[in-house]
Length: 202
Image (cartoon, one colour):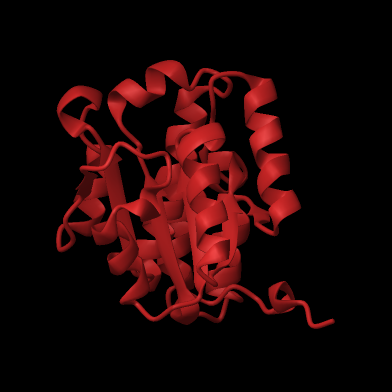
């Protein structure tokens, strides 16, 4: 049986969807240090920006839950943040979100959401049903408890979502150090958001 996930992630075939990185949402996502989550999702987004990966940003109830992280919005000044009108855990139930992802024509859906147990997992499962190859970036997410976070990840993996980290995704997109964007990725992503690459060499 052919395994569609043996093919590497490629910047030219990927679309990035980030769901509900909003100030008030961070209050309840206490399983993982929010500073760690924010650092990682910013690294993922910056990698996408540098490599030209189409990116979709969405919020739910922005009036009450706050705006999308401004540091990420500033990376993508040419795209609107889609505030979903339908109060659903599945971001793809909002036609604007689904159509924004689908119109890219890309089948590798790289996905993360602030709450693994809700919007991330619901949207990931829907993405599989819609025919996307879904890659869930797990170190850019959190949930209401560690048990909820772990069980949501297991649920996604059981369904066919491939678990990833931000560095794994960006590295697959880059492919190797001969990539013409490698220097910028080193200075603005790896060194900026990872302790090992960021340390000064003797």
